[in-house]
Amino acid sequence: MPGSLQTILCDRLGSRYPIVQTAMGWVADANLTAATCNAGGFGFFAGATTESGDVENQLQAIKSKTDRPFGVNFHMFQPNAEEVIAAVIRHKVRAVSYGRGPDAKTIRRLKDAGVVCMPTVGALKHAVKAVELGADIITVQGGEGGGHTGAVPTTILLPQVLDAVKVPVVAAGGFFDGRGLAAALSYGAAGIAMGTRFLMTRDSPVPLSALERYLKTNDPTDIRVTTAVDGLPQRFIENAEIRRLENMGLPARLAMSMKYARQWGRESGLGPIAMVKLGLKVMSSGDNSFAQTVMAPNLPTLVQRGVVAGDADAGLLPSGQAAAMISKLESCEDLISRIVQEATVRLRSASALVAAA
Image (cartoon, rainbow, N blue to C red; front, top):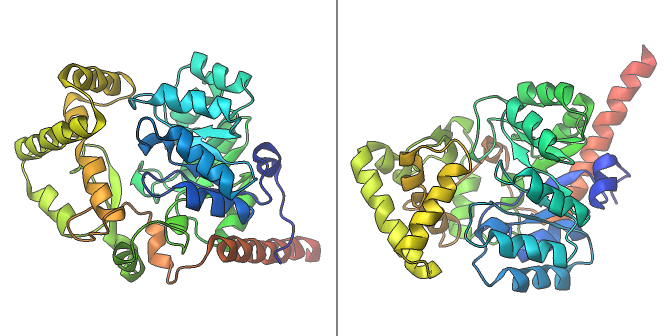
């Protein structure tokens, strides 16, 4: 059994250990979220990619698999954002994660309902702004992280944010073992958040065909950032689809995105007017340019092809550079237990150095 390792993060989230599983789209399903929570971590369910009308079913599924607190993520620009927020409040979900979308009024609504607000940011200015808007905890993702990511590495971004805000800070981007947890706690973080490490577990819904590609990737430089998908920097495992997109001209990528947008709109029951309204909502939610907004539909189609259908060549495989350090699939139970044991050993060793001095 792992030892005791408690921080303020455990108190706020109700988890046994200061280890968070991030809400990876189409990956952080009810099973993975519940498995993380049952193992002592804190799991976030991917509410941002849950279909309209299915949020209630998914939250009920999580609650049928665990009696531990869990979280849900969302984006204000998603068509069913209000459905997610209302369900979170109704089910007394412990925490929500989000980007820069929610305004102070929405955050206050969640906080008044007892929901911990825990945004993820990739820049110092966004961390400061999130706290001003009412965030209770900040997750900072360094450039090593997967999916949309910034350019500042965790070792720089984490101390920057720790020095600038007075709320608990969780470190993300490049974490995969107990050494990382011990290091983050030594920096002053309240815990760590991991996406890729939980994606690469036996509790993950990702098909084995895709997981095998993750396991075979052992060079961190093969997990790289590109802007070819939707105009924003994102980190993926190098494959044929990334190279194809990068060799396409902008007009061809925009045409492809319009095709995917029409397909997604039909599947979501959105007509042309609703699609235009959604596009305007996306543009107003952050720093997205017109081209980035138009290209946005490329992302869900290609990511689902990779992590849902398991096509490791024609789909996209979002990944942090930590994938290069992972050589086997463990259960969430074994993973969290091992990380806590490793971190405890490291922290005791460091403490002994101080005592010896």
